[in-house]
Amino acid sequence: MADEILSHRLLGESLNEVRCRDKGLWPHRRHKFKRISPWDRRIHVSVNGNIDWAFTFARQPLPARGRAHPPAFPRRPFPPPAPGHTLRHVNEPRRWLVLGHSGTRGEGLDGAPPWPVLLEQLLAKAGDDVRITAVDVFPNGPKAADYALRRVAEFEPDAVLLSLNAYPCAVPVVSERVRTRFGARIQRLYARAEAAWQRRTSRKRAPAVIERAVRAVAQRLVGAEPMVTVAATAETYSLILERLTALEGPRPVVIAEVPFSAVLRRTHPGAMPRVRKLQALVRPVADARHIDWIDLGEELAGAADGDLWQTDGVHLSANGNVLYADVLARRLAGG
Image (cartoon, rainbow, N blue to C red; front, side, top):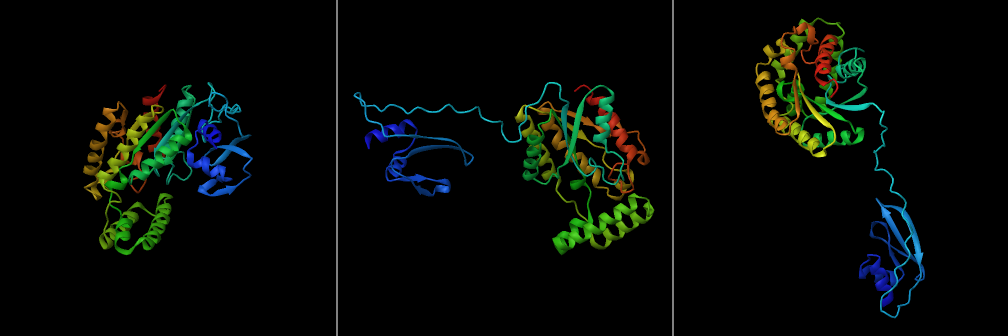
């Protein structure tokens, strides 16, 4: 028994494991024990529950000096790359990831490309080979930051463009009041009806005046409230920026978007103060970590509402996406 204890201790096993093995028991997956032959000494080295390699050794007598000879370990193969990690060639195009929202995926554009696609095309014309991918991130807490960092780990980008989406905390919506008053099931039904109505109005099947009238009546009858507080939204974006800079890999860039149309700002007077508060909370976090900040509100201050927005006043029109891409291409070219 003493020689087995020494041999097993050389393998890094505890005395309890040695006793279990001496009785013919083997600690199996999920702490179950599997009976084996006491003469079969099999050592399994597992990674994430999968057996990598195994070998068998025999009982070893004690030498004269009182120490057991260590067993001959086989040479371990070179470990494979981590899941999701790919070896990149020098000449591969760079990867950019946009942490965006419904506007970055082209909501209501009816086939027209959104600004991430247009930005990729403009950079390619300038000789900058970049592949841009956009994903939606709803800023509603730490889980949103976890999701964003998982997508960053999945795509392994060279740069991350974080679009500050102020809509969830700045614009009160009827669907959120419906959820708080009538429950999640009624809220889902209302959201489907609202999405269908928005698709019809975005295709010019109903005048914008009718759309605004319907929304005003719904807000007057049911009420409206923002989906997320400004503090929770700012905390989510700040957490994303902190974790991005801790990676020391991708270059983060913050894009402060144009805060809605003039018509929507008149309809919801409290929207602009919430937008300014959100940017005031996130800007110091970006400045402290030397993160680039692109204020599209300043860049496109002279643009008319008809050149930027769809009828809902929230999503960019086709021409608005072109203007966004032009500004970002100038600011990010060669970066």
